[in-house]
Image: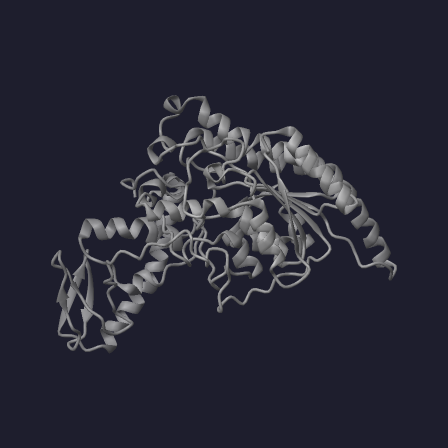
Length: 471
C-alpha cells in the first residue's frame, strides 16, 4: 500500500494508519470467504496440478486448457469456482460523442419520482454533471432553468467556454453543448418536465441576479431546488499543469477554482435563498392544510453544491482541494442559518464520472495519467445522470433530505441506500469502498509485482466495505 501513487483521494485514505489497519482487517475477513471458496474447489474438483499465484495455490482441473502468457504465467478457463482472470486486453476507446452518454438503456428499471409542478435552477448545465442533473430533474417533471455560459449565439470556436474562458475545443461536438441543447433534451422527454435555457456566467453577479429575477417573475417566486454545478479551470491547462505544485501554478488556479466553483456557488445561493424561504413557508402552510384534510402537502426546498472527495483528502492540487472543502463548509454553515426557515442544503460527492471531458481525455490517451488510473468503464464509473437521480430521489423524500442537511452525501452511497440505479441499471461503488479501491489500485499493483493475474474467486468477491472519512 505505501507504494501506491498519491494520485487518488482513496490512496490518501488508505495510507492513514487507522484506515490502513481497518482495510487490512476488512480484507482479512473477506479472505476467509475466499479461502472457504478455494477449499471447496479443492475438495470437490479433482486436480492433478496446481498454479501458484503469489503464494496462493489454486487447484487446476485436469481437463482445463492451460496456456502460457507472454510473461510465462499460466491461466485457465474452467470451473467458475477456481478460474483465474486472464483478460489483459485494452478496453475499447469510449467516444465522447456517443449518444449513450446521457441516454438510458433497456436494463434501466429506474422510475423517476413525480416532482411535477416544482422549479429548479441548475448552473453549469450545458454538459457534465450539471447537465445530467438538469435532465433527471426534467425527467421527474420539474421546470428546469438551464443556466450556463454556452449559448447558441456564441462563436463555435469558443462554445463551451463562454465569456472568453477558452478558445479551444475540448472535445468533438463541444459546440453543441449549450443551454438550448440541454433544454431541448428536457422538452423531448415524456411528461410535464420543461427546460428553460438561460445564458448565465456565475462570475458575473449581474448575470446571476438577472437569472433569479427571471425565475421569480415567471414562477411567481417559487424555487424548490438550486444546484450549483458550475466549475472552471484555467484555459489551455494540461494534466501536468493541473497536478503541479501550488507555488508553480500561482494565482490563476486559485482564482478559477474559487471564483467559479466557490464564489459562484455562494452568489448563486445568495440570490436563490429569498425565493426558497418563501417556497418553504408556502409548503409549511400547505402541510397545515393537509393535516386538516385540505391542500396536498408541502415540499421543502434544497440547495445542492457539487463538491468532491477532494474536500476530504488531497486531490489534484491545493487550490482544488481547498475549494471543495470550502464548498462542504458552505453547505454546513448555510444549513445552520437556513434550518429555521425550512431550507435544506447538501454537498454532493459524485464518484468518477463519464463526462464529455473525461471521455475525451481517454480518447487522447491522457486519462490514466490524469486520473491516476481510475476506471472509466460503465458500471465502475458513473454517468452524469447518476448524480441527477440522487438529487431527484432526495427531493422526493423530505425526511431523509432533512437528515442530511448540512452534510456530505456520496452519490453511490445514496444509490445503495435509497435504491436508485445508473442509466445502465448498475450501481457503481463509492470510491471509498473496497469494491472500488481493491480492483482499481491494490490488485493491479499486486498483479504487476507478481507478474500474474489474481483468481476470479478473489476479484469477484470483494466486500462493499467503506473506509471511514479522514480526520
